Image (cartoon, rainbow, N blue to C red; front, side, top):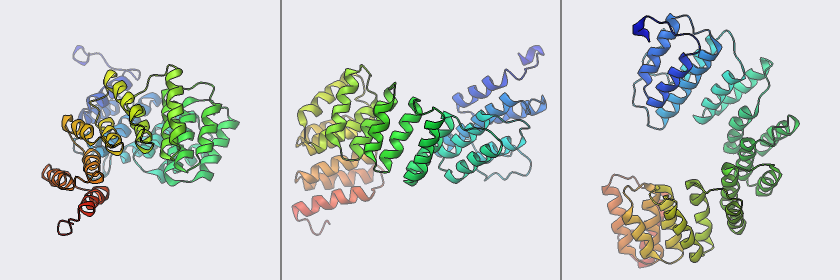
Length: 356
């Protein structure tokens, strides 16, 4: 289009910036930002929001190891070492007009990247600008109070949601369920779930995980059955959440049924589900099945290594556990505290004092 001498307008750049995010091409995104400035469209609200979203997404990619690009100057005087989220703040500061979407993008970016105080500061700034938080704002802020285990602040958000009729929103409901569960208020989680007029797979997964994480295993399994009865299709996170319930209740027959469902659904190549299956079979006494699943895995992470080592340790296979521990180190996977507990357990059961 540019080669034909046609000039892009404010409606076009948001789509181009979104394409840069999907391509994970930070340098291209920054080049497009320069193009936006040259065309004088950096003061456009929708283009500004698209820039905020792009830089926030690239910060998440950078923190998660998905973005290999090296940061370089976008604004005069910005040092190369400054993290990508400073670009988000800079874009927001330069926008002459801001709306709820502008603030939500920055709040969500801060919250997702662990910058909780900055996210809450932006919520206050949003209020000072006479803008009311919407359901997206609340669902971004609630995980912060879940992380802080601050049930009182979480309840304040819950009250705000009820007063502004956001409490029937599925995303808000799921965020509230997670927040109460993290604060060990499982009854409140169930109460929020039961009041939801509509339940999607996210809300079902949230309440199942909430029950299992708080040790209410029977209720978690009941909710899983209700989810299937409601014809809501389980996802990979569903199986990762429910499998520990089968392990702790040592219900091998149910675990096998779930394993069959996982295979039929094509989830058996998921690393998190495989680790949950290893743990379930090991705890339920079938160490051979646990080892078979482990050996079939293409890649092993810390969780899967620890699960199989602990499985062998609990069944008295100390030498196998030690061998696996050494293999884990050879593969470049650094042991964590749980891995050491697993291998010490193996030494303890077999009386291997020198190895311990």
